[in-house]
Image (cartoon, rainbow, N blue to C red; front, side):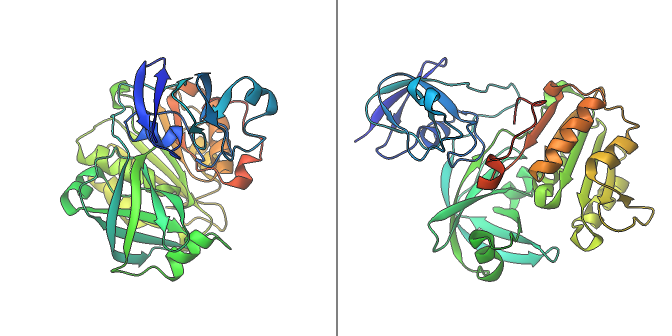
Length: 352
């Protein structure tokens, strides 16, 4: 049995299937409700029930406090409808954001490459075309586990349209069941399922400002897609990528970005290592410190796009704001685990 969901202030009414979450139903209709962890842990997708009835689901008590429950608030990522319902949500509208409903896809694994000792590139051919904005991600169903994991799309939309394949860069998490399966058991020829696209991490082109991309670890996926999309699309505004890894063995797509910096005069590549000495071409230090040195601690007049571990993003946010970049010009994608959700996030940045 389905129920009607009205989303204010849009005034849009959509149908929600039995057992389907508010968030999933909205995303599949192209309505974006801000969210992050998708597991009831972070509280980003909090909405108010104005009329009707919703089951709270497995909302973490720290993400949805007792007094908030009494006020009629729910987490859209785990709440399901028990009757026709009206909610009020902080609906995100952006002139540069495309309205792309989330869909389910069947796919075949075509190739798996070892990029670094801990990161693999998994390429899958989709059963039908996927439209997405560079920077968005998919939810990848782990065979046999009944669980999904979020991975950013690492190649540009034009390449995906031409080849029908998306690339996912997967870092093996010690003890992680999902990434362990993808690294140790998944093979070319396997059939898989995924859904997407998700997220609001995309370039705000209408601003026309110089761009700084700051990435760490396997967080290079989204920036790679975005930068390739910009350069191939003829954007001439200055673009700088500051990319950090612990050591040289983990620094992947290094040669590709060096080649792009030689081909496109408006693109600057600044690699960094947090462990071990640099070699003249590779700086030594953390991403935020290397970026601060490269820009002489003055980021004003730019837009910044961040992707990587939560600690890296928080450090970069602090450095950027200390370097005269306002919050309105800082965008990021930070995947939040159960452990991350228990940590106190930066009070300087409201969009986390």
